[in-house]
Image 1 (spheres, rainbow, N blue to C red):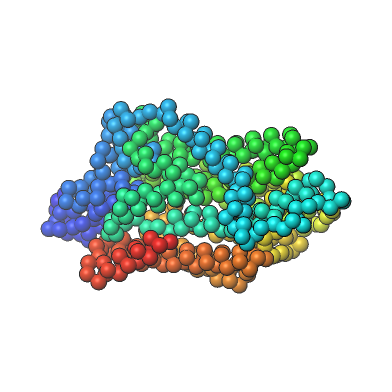
Image 2 (image 1 turned 45 degrees about the vertical axis):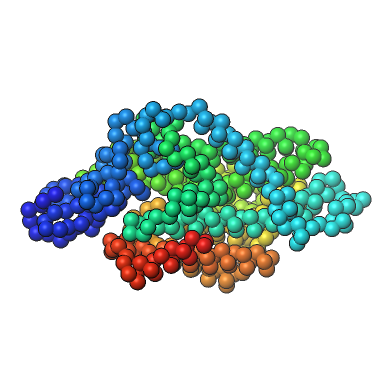
Length: 493
């Protein structure tokens, strides 16, 4: 485009001889005699500066910030591309999603057996632990047998949290060469497995399930897997509770109690990223529109509902995990109230803090096995932290840090600024962990320290790579060699 006057080249534009074109992954609009450029959702805008002009889009895309598909095309469910309407079919989606939720549920219920098998040489229970004494109840024996195999749960949580957090630290820039299609597929599948996303179906890129599906609808459909998983684990919990008077019913109840807690912890990031993305607005032509779908003006009724959900469920969840596990241990609340509190944390937090501060409770000598299992997941791996008569669980501190990473990854456009802040958060978390040394198990402290250290390295590497994105500079010579080396190190983790 020819502007006709001399002016500073806008950020996101490539200027030459009075002609202005959009750089890769930017989209421009002329408004009030000025040209503005906006970053695009990944791969929505044209990556060919020679052909894009200032408002070019990727193939079969158009509209503001290229968030719409052309007529006759629909959003692909697992890719940023638009596919022909003729490829849309949903007869396979529902059975596949239900099957995936069943497999995840079975994994969470029997993860103790899987972990026991993987670590049996280190954690093989002795015969003495398997034989109940004459005074031991059946429930207590079932709990003891389960815990003998369940003592690796904190390692499982550390592993899942690492893969989920590392996915937030990646930077997508046109000035860094993309991975090969095979490596990209492997990354997406591994990320999907650990982040409880349907990215495990990444190989089915060019498919859609509903003709005319918008970006917002795609986000909701991809998130639908999480409620199905919650319902699946809760259903198993309710069924096992009904038969808890039997020997196998008690053991299954303990497994299902732990399964629901793990399902909620492991799906927290996926839910948080999706909810924040559906609230992320940007101003274009004096109008606030949704960044992922510029056809939606902010703030619609459904966004108001999401705002309430974020404010009253997602944001206070870290505080909930700080104060409530002790209340469960002290029998201030029941396990059913704890499960309800996972969805509506604030009333539970207020009640537990008041009762704990005023010491309006009495320690109970007997705690059922299915509650002990949850306590062993959330509180017992950590050292006791007490603040004004309120016992603080370290797991909630970790949730606070992860929430901050989610907010930065979602709302900060500038990749360099985002990675610098995420690097500071990761470094602070590592130092905090090194000082607090919160786990009772020395190996767990080392594992968490290693996880935090790798996250610091990844954030530093991607901070360096994001400098090129901010400067809009394509590396050459020694700079390219350095970036390639950092890329190889990044691939290792």
